[in-house]
Image (cartoon, rainbow, N blue to C red; front, side, top):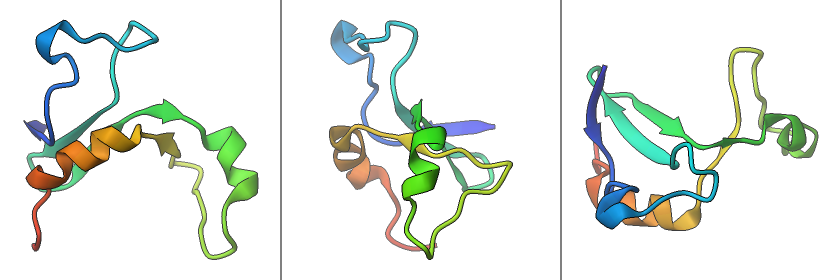
Length: 80
């Protein structure tokens, strides 16, 4: 299912997250989709969503640190 990490390993060089149990991460799945590991902010974020955005019952809104996505940019494909 998890085919390839997108961006650098968040645990590289012994790095640890503040929570200690894991780190935010981005993975490409074997079907080409992406999985995001981040802090669940769904309950706080839903009331603040713009009118054109929604979050279904089977969806969650997660927060990623900016540097995680910026550092992953080089691994994100430009096209299909």
